[in-house]
Length: 457
Image (cartoon, rainbow, N blue to C red; front, side):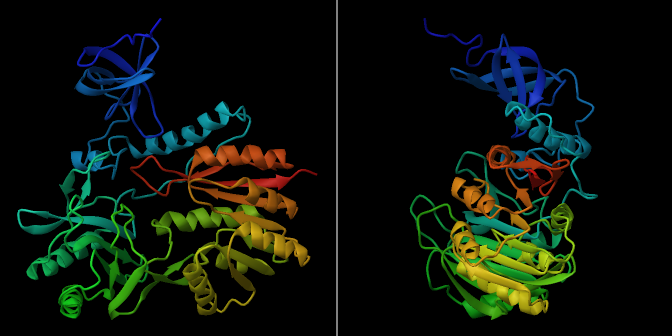
């Protein structure tokens, strides 16, 4: 017999919100059937309109809020929810921190690891205007170039000038750059036709140095009046020390192409992190919330329990942000990263900070771990900070095969973290102490986490 959901499309009903999904959507149950709705918080009684009905769950929108959660705050603007810039903006910040802690607790419980404790999330004093990097699409509106964002799950462009979670100076620089580009009547990129010139703007700013970089992403290799444009941007924004053009000819939603050309100034900006100086180029991976990154890395270093005598491996070292912090407290540090340009940056950053106890290699971490093991290198600590997909089984095999005393895992995805904790436990490691969430991305559902795994004795 075919299952018939207890609700139908366009039906209106009254219900109480019971939970939030990891994406921040309200959860409503109707005779055991789940409906998801935006802008709804646990405990609120709402009248809702059913938008879509599937076999296992459906979607609805709030028509009227009959009761209001004590954790609800006034939103800064509908656009920030529609675009996914700030999907949790209606949730009070202390409640956001609890929500992120609960995300990890719920995943541990699902994996039958609920005996592992999760500490309270480390938050920010000011949970707005924290991002040091903007990557915003540019499209044509009424004959002019405009910055903005796309509505979630669509190609509908929403013009925006104030992005709420970016450093306010970035928003100001973007406005000035758009003014300059509009003066030259440059054509905006058209996604459907794969035509036009200006695709995206990227702006990076040093949190401490206040140096700024502008990257104009174009579809074509030639940007008309490129030198004049760069000079006018710098005249309008003297804190811009670098103007670059990035060329992306592909029909893709990947923002940056492979080729980047210097139009003005330096090919990098400088900034400091936990007292160390870094050069950051257009393509560098550098954490976007410097205030919280300092707390994140301080936590990771503290978890590593260093005495100054250790050998450490940084398995996803990027431009060396964690490696250099380790180097100050270790005898030797080995960093590995698959992106060659990042390793060049890491070596330069080590020189910049006069640290000579680091060695950086290009390639897969598991391949280099095998080589280092053959050479008799045994790390006391392995630090891992993988992308959202988490660790591969081969990396877990290689890392645990080196028999380190401690593995410090910095995660940006609680789901893959919990999966990898299980794999590491099967390899003879256990979670030491409490898992520590750090809020790198206030107003969004994302959370970073630090976990110490110690070898079973």
